[in-house]
Image (tube, rainbow over the protein chains, first blue to last red):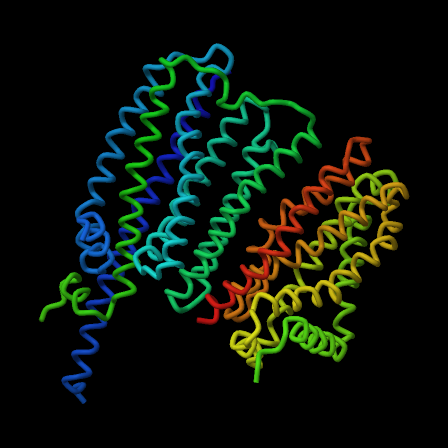
Length: 52
Length: 249
Length: 227
């Protein structure tokens, strides 16, 4: 019986989980940075008086 | 003051930690990937096939490190939680909560690889053997910590509550493990499954230790990255965070 | 004015809680009905073969009692959080852990003990062999207080969260597992003719530990959750 598919499957699952673990925090960090910049822009606009 | 202690105190400051994490995250990931490459090469090409299990035992080289990591990370999470609750150190709250998803991931890998390994061995994708069942309960404990942390709005209160839950869990973990083992012996008789505990020659174990080291490096990278993101989110209004995010002055 | 003695405080707390339960005594029947319904689900789902039901009876009865106890956990602190009495308990001159111990005791007495008392009737519905009933009752008498005590700790953590019922159940179940394993396991062991006293002794040891540690842990958890 060929066990190759199982070995490949297991290693692929491992790689997939690691990729997930790598990507999710990066995306979260990028989102946090973007939110900070947007929030700063909103507060600056509020202080300068919104163009009304 | 003792320089090591001073370094710890300084690390507790959010901007210092952000710089520290930014520096060491790539180191963790790169070292992790390099050692993983060595370990996986050894696991797949160097080590000869097992006479009983054929090639499927090569799954051991990811299943066992993942299982050990799942337990190690839970212990570390509880350790950080204790420090956070006793000494009210914000950084340890962040680190404890950052541990949870990584530990849950490693637990999921353990369960998935255990299931995939079990199919050619036992003929079924799942068998209620004590080790896999304990890992399943461990996954529930991790998900509970993650869920409780997400359910409370105030980030600090959430981390403290979830940290407390982690501590309760770590105290009960041996009890759960023992109860599952007892349950297994009661219902399935004393069938011992050769699941990675078969005596292996030393020449076949070295990739295992390399993989154990690799997962530790990877964990450091991932932990610091997640902690850095959480740290930045919590301090979103502060000046240092704005400077770090690149807000034009 | 000096602080009240522990016994006086316990008596006051117990009387208050009992009075509150008495005012909603209709609600106290709900766990019993729930357990009855859970027990009824199994013959409806699996078929009414007496031998099959007798074999799964200990496990089903234990699961029914466990789930019913789980659902009552939400009421442990809910009303006190809503009307602010929990903060009063925090500020009381008597240790919070002591008040919580009394609270959990009353809760077990009014919510779980009726379940245990009703169990022989439920056991009849599942054709449980009569010689297993004493072991089952013993395991439930040791196990349900343990569930209440551990549940009190977890419920304390979710005290500030709205609509936390499902989350509370998910958090509590992994911790309930050993109690279920040893409780139902003792009866299953007795059914197979194997020694069953060991599991009960383990439950007893766990209960002794929980009686001391759980109120302290619950008090710490309440402080964490309310701050």
